[in-house]
Amino acid sequence: MPGRLQGKVALITGAGSGIGAACAVAFAREGARIAAADLKLETAAQIARQITDSGGDALALAGDVSKRKDAESLVAGTVAHYRRVDVLVNSAGVSPRAAPREWDFEQVWDWVMDVNLKGTLLVSKFAAEHMVGQGSGAIVNLSSIYGLVGRPGHLGIPLDPYVHSKGGVSLLTMNLANHLAKKGVRVNALCPAFDYKNLTKTHTHDPQARKML
Image (cartoon, rainbow, N blue to C red; front, side, top):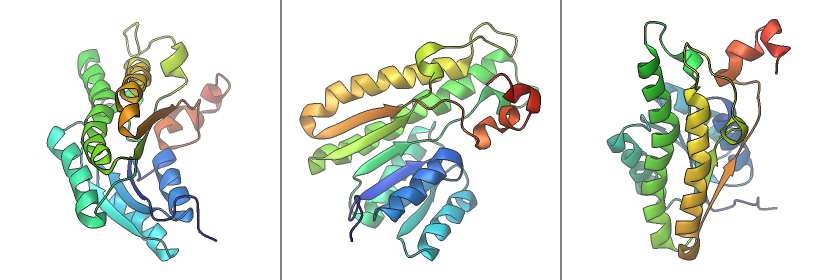
């Protein structure tokens, strides 16, 4: 029996781990052809290989979503290989806890905002151009529960860049949805709470921190 995504092409950023990897595997199980994108090609290739070994169709791509040229190349690479892009999942993201210790608060802020918010905007822009040309498509952005309700700051600053980046993703999703709805493209956001994945391992692997979740 064909899956719900049979014949569709899905570009998934941050596909090398966490929610992005889970989406790539789940979408492939439903029949989608997957363009698995990650910052490092070897990481994306591991997920692509997992999918193809299970009988699916997957392509590995590498790029930094915060860079315009890379974001455009991820979409162009997907379209060049599969001739279309039906679904975009913007799962690439970073946490301030993963920033180099020598960075000051401004460097951390810029990095988180560039990857989480600007990266979502850039890949969405280039994917949407193809989707509008096709007359159909769906964009799913990974926001966060913190992007809706906020949380106390840390890193020596009162405002957490992760919270603001995800709040921006939530509002960006609404604006894109309004702009693209009449052009046949749906845009939605997922706002998960804590998940036991790579991005949150500094919290979820710490027994004391887990008591606070």
